[in-house]
Structures are given as C-alpha cells and as structure tokens.
Length: 101
Image (cartoon, rainbow, N blue to C red; front, side, top):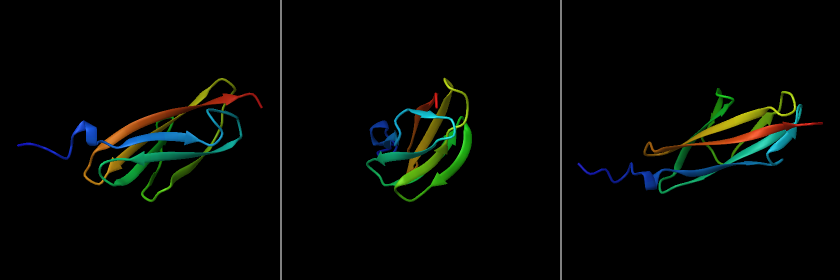
C-alpha cells in the first residue's frame, strides 16, 4: 500500500528564532519563537529546555519565554517537536550560550 501522506518531503520545516540572538546573560528572559510550515497544517509544537518538557503550543505564533539560568559558558538547549495534522513530525534544536553579564 502506497503512503502519500507520511513522506519525508512532507514533514514540517521549522526553525527556532531567539530575539536576543544565541547569547544571553544569566537572569535574562529571552523570547523564543518557532517558525514552522509544511504541506499540511501545523497542529502542535512541544517545547523542551535541556530535555525537560515545558509545554505544548497549538496556536500560532508559537512563542515562549526562556529564563536564562546558569554560569557563563554553559548552554541551554531548546528542543521543539513540530507536528502537522496528519502525524508527521520534525525535531529541531537551538542553544542559548550563557554570556557574562
């Protein structure tokens, strides 16, 4: 049986945009946004910070705050899993490097 829905070329395409760029000092609050599109409508975006689940977003814009905590040189890894309405998914990552104040 031929599946013409769950093909790699139909998976969502996405990227994580950070309003502050990829560096921020500890204590900063950064707005992150997931830009996503695909052949099928985007249904949900799940967000993880350093592998810890932080929530799901079902309405665009897919924006969420990140509070930067740690010592300079460390990184916070943001992972987004983007799902379309037929069950295709894409996982993307972006890091925030903690900078000096």
